[in-house]
Amino acid sequence: MSATFARRQIVLAALALNAVRPLRGAWPGIPSFAFGWPVSELAPHLLALTAVDTVAELTVRKSPPSKTGLAAAAVSAGLLASAIADAHRVGVQLDEALCEGIGEDYLTTLDLPGPIDLKIPRGAITRPFKLNHRDVEVLRNVPYTEGGRRGNVDIYRPRGADLNDAPVLLQIHGGGWTIGNKEQQGLILMNRMAQQGWVCVAANYRLAPRHPFPAQIVDVKRAIAWVHENIKEYGGDASYVVITGGSAGGHLSALAALTPGLPDYQPGFENADTSVVGCVPFYGLYDMGGISGTRTSVDMRDRFLGPVVFRKNPARHLEDFVQASPLSHVGAHAPDFFVIHGRNDTLLPIAETRAFVDALREKSDATVTYAEVAGAQHAFDVFSSIRSQHAIGAVQRWLQWHRANHQSRTR
Image (cartoon, rainbow, N blue to C red; front, side, top):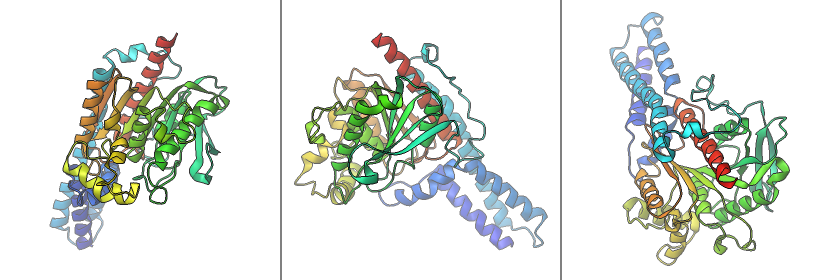
């Protein structure tokens, strides 16, 4: 039993080390993400299991305690405790980002129904996979275009409420443009905003490689147009639509926000309204064409985006990759942005996100808020954790500030 305990604790120590200091690079970054992301967000649970396992090793098991196992357990506990401390500090860091982006008095400008609770909701950490709330109703599989389930949206809104001109949040899922669906991501944010009286719409879209890019952005544009034309029936305000998403959804939401009315991405519905008033992309990809010239962006373009997502050779069709880059569309009339990225992200480098934010701040007249989330891997907000709850709380504050500010400007 001592040998088994030692093996468990050595493996856990290695996983905890990867979570705190992840491996980077094109190939090691993928397994580093796969193992590091859940460990980072489930650190409190793993620390508790380590403590129970260690106590059992010292008191219950009959064989002599393993010194190697106890040493590994001590390392695991220290690394997991460090990860938990980093997660707790995220709330302060995000509040500082909000103060820098929208003003230190942003909380005093709010004039909307619903409390803004800066604390982590009770039970959010002990039940990390309980993401839906009984006071939120979900209307499943409402068609926004032809194409079966890939052309459907889900609508989240407060149960039993008589809504009229409620603010609207459109969620775009990630998955490398090749996998994923509307039921898997953005659940914490949509449920929280629905509790605050918002109408939230989660959209599916066609996936590559069966449907090469730009099918994905065309579908996202169709979803925005559908929201403008139909959301009033569900209590929403078509004049106030914010778009959000993570990873590929972060890319698609940013690209859609910056290209309203772009004919190439609106075939057959060129005159439809596809504008949004704000965008909240999580850990997105903003350079599809290697515009920045970094090795990472060029490698992703040539090794993955070209053969899998676009099914085109970048050497012959570089303009298509550049046009698909949100970085190439930044201009004076961009909507307001709240950009979020994890510092430990090993799938999509944070350097390109910084370049995108710098371009927004330099070229646009919009409000640009940017937060780098300490200790966060890619997809850190998919289930409930200390870090994800702090991040979603910050997004809630930004959204409610933005709604109040928008209403004051349009009166």
